[in-house]
Image (cartoon, rainbow over all chains, first blue to last red):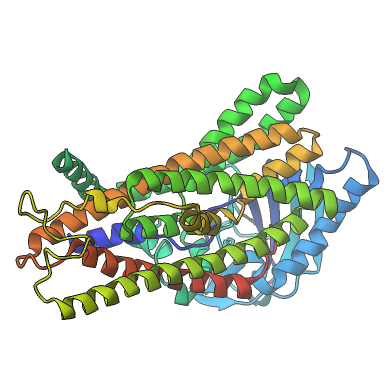
Length: 208
Length: 318
């Protein structure tokens, strides 16, 4: 009983800074395979939510040069800012993290009223999904932004001749303990940076 | 009456514990986050509607904003942590807890309005510039949290020290507090109820303002986004109305939390009182010990937040 009470108190004595999401991104991922059947890169398309997009670009009239410049300059700035954060991507091979090389291909455009950021994240070492368990997650560690693949556009594989490989999205399933930990008082361990993965989907690439 | 309150509070706590045990609480939290996302997605569309149809469509926007505030505040955030720790450990009545919750929520909305007005007018319209300034305000609010915790802790420690000295001078001074609080009520011979007059500590502006600022000084990003979009659509007053609605929604959730914190304290104290076989323990001592712990907790929390806020820097995207 006492433990439960403590858990409850911890839940309410939440310290995570402004942690709940303030923006939403619909993620679309394409896993790029090389001719040798190795995963060489992951292409990302991030569709920002309406309100965020509006706050970035709506200060300008619809076809003013200022607006076009803001949309165009969005990608280089965000990509530069994201580099120290691993582009919000965590790629693992047999639970070992794989680094991404610096992103050099990127662009931003408007899709209706929403900002769309596209970029290609090259893996520092190509990996074979037939030999290793490859998975990746796209998420904001601070959980300032909620990022997810919409159900109707799951991750796909490109250049994969054989049909026995596929990508499967595993939903996040935070437990009571996860919540308590996320909302609890371990400031020492920089709680802000552990929150995002609790709510992050995991994409597993599976081959027969 | 007191018994009923205590029972209700105990029920809430036990029910909460059971809910957390069976995962219902989780599903509730996940659901609030999901709903919040849905509402967020509707905000921009609702604002464009107002831009097209004028104030007629403002009702929908304000309704969405109100709900957004309610759901948004249900997630984690330092304001709630400060207010629940403070109310859970200090000698404050529920009425004042509610006042603090509402005032700090409204202050948060007001700060967002002022920030966007100032930044958009002086520095030019830019989300990142506004967010950068908001980040500095955030660090300032964390520093205030540290200060608040320190003041609470020192005040309680002084209280304990004074009591300790007094008890050394008059070891049997239970009935001779010299006009101060007494552990026994002369008429009934039993210990004072903790909901008695000695809870009536005057809440001055000097006492309330640091708490309100510590919580309200950091404007919510959602409010900033709404105001910026409203500003660019020439809907300044609509944006301000929406942010006000958001603040009221936040106030509702935080008030509910404050009620829970105060009830929890009542239950815990009653439990403690029953457990104390020797009736020597002064109700004030309990509050001082509790206040000391709460102050230290809030202070440490503020330090952690401040250190983090200084080291992490601005979010790469927002």
